[in-house]
Amino acid sequence: MGIAFKSRVQSTKILDPKTGYEEKTLTLETRWDPLTGRTSRVLDLPIKKLDALNMEEMLKRCGDVFCPFCPDVLEQVTPRFADDLIAGGRLRFGEACVLPNRLPFDRYCAVVVLTRRHYCPLADFTEEQLFNGFSIARSFLRRLVEVDPAARFFSINWNYLPMSGGSIIHPHLQIIGGDLPTHYQGEMIEGGRSYRQQGGNIFWDDLLTTEADLGERYLGALGNTAWLTSYAPLGFADIMAVVRERTSIIDLTDQDLGDLARGLLKVFQYFQDFNHYSFNLGLYSGEYGGDDSFWVNARIVTRRLLPPVGASDVSYFEKLHRESIGYKKPERLCEEMKAYF
Ligand SMILES: [Zn+2]
Image (cartoon, rainbow, N blue to C red; front, top):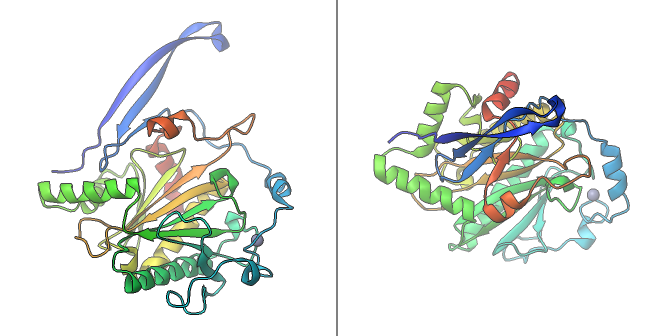
């Protein structure tokens, strides 16, 4: 069947005041995600590096807000799980601590506080902190499937800093699990199944082979995990990681989690050098106990406030049209990022 990278380029004309109202042609490209068919619009603006932000200002604005995840208060103010789910109420590994989310986004909804430090700049995250955080999240999910066979769909997510929707500065992952996938997770699972049924191959296997051959978006591999820029981006910079032959987060080995942590640190290094301060991350799992047509994968999408008024980078497109805007071609992003892998 093969991977189809469908796209359509269109142009529009304006009379440009910057050049005495001469006619100027602007182009945009619509891309269809090769798995889900969801469309993204790529404008490819001539932006190399974003403006630096004053993070001290951001921290000052958030300075007086009480933080429940700081180590001196965490034990007293955060919820605990019932002992029949998690003996002792919370899970700990190194600096990482798993506790219930107060907001019930799913049947099981947990937070992984990643560090003892309240604000951790991207430059300061260590492989050990990331490994421990994802590892304890995997332990939590392993416990879920032990106690509740109906919990078959999970993901581990991260809103890093308020620009991405994170309401608490203190670095934390969010785990959701239950008997329903999220919309996009469901689309990926169904897309992978029908790809397998139609051609006999695994979409993710074909995707990685095709992307590695093309080399336009392929960043490299760390162990079993391949890193690439997403063909149909969900934001300014959209980076994807795919773990070969693992259908569920529960199946990830320590080696896989270490590779994932090392890859993330490379992405963070790129983010620092190109002034990306905030991101959303989703690490998706296929249906637990389902078939082998899904491979665990992650998407990391940068987020920022737009100058000059600090507008949200999510607009009517994402909210009301379910379509994303990319401002840089994934191929150009790949060129910039390749040196980091
Ligand atoms: Zn804190």
